[in-house]
Length: 343
Ligand SMILES: Nc1ncnc2c1ncn2[C@@H]1O[C@H](COP(=O)(O)OP(=O)(O)OP(=O)(O)O)[C@@H](O)[C@H]1O
Ligand SMILES: [Mg+2]
Image (cartoon, rainbow, N blue to C red; front, side, top):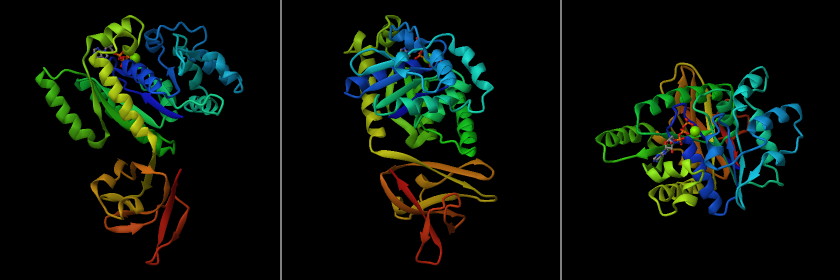
């Protein structure tokens, strides 16, 4: 099951609109999809016209009491292969309840481990997060392989991104598996000069991480939400529907046959660090340069196809194996190569 969260602490940037319409479109394309509304505002739940008697708040509460609880009763069907765990205001008190637990950040991981078993057999799980970086959002991040960060055309969307980066960095440092971030432009209107300037900046900043699909401003998206319908039920021929169709195609491609692998190096006093190996013909290049998270932590995640790869780090022209990976073999120069298996 591929788990994708929509996250940005900035409110109103298109998280819910994107989560709901992407999830629906992935289902229309033949995938079995479950959407989880993790926002106490319950906008995705309302968007889909669902009135859950049991919500994600009940799910958390009952799962904490009894991890073998029947998960089926929390899942509402909304079409042949589209399923929803709805939300309710009660979810806001869940943050408090979770905060005293030692596993407070990983309750959703445990729930989704149970949901991703063979009986349910979902292809995608899409999570709509609240507009903050609290415990619920952190649960979603740790459960996800991909985090999509919608960026409305405004400066404040970007400020939310900086905070999110710091949090991902901190989680990675504590050895949590963090999702790969991708950026999605929403509410794009090229009639405004500012859109062009904003777009240029975002392209420069996020480079390969900016999704090529951009969601244009479309009044029918707003009307669909008010009518409690997805854009595909409301106006299939609209620009909004067209954009979310393209997004679903892009996400399917992105998640299909690659895995994202994280490389982390802890070392002092380095100027720059690269990872080189069989996946890039042992060549140092900008695309394989690690980011400095803290003065002594370097990080990169890379999309790799299934297979086995030998690799090393190169830091300030010194080549060495990955100190955090115990799987090694001798190289031809009297040193060691690290070995990575991507499955
Ligand atoms: N591309 C678009 N064109 C026109 N209106 C849009 C578009 N995307 C979203 N909207 C509208 O903007 C408003 C905010 O969108 P949405 O609820 O998806 O944002 P959000 O990030 O989930 O907000 P919150 O942070 O409050 O959860 C909604 O009224 C929605 O209908
Ligand atoms: Mg929302």
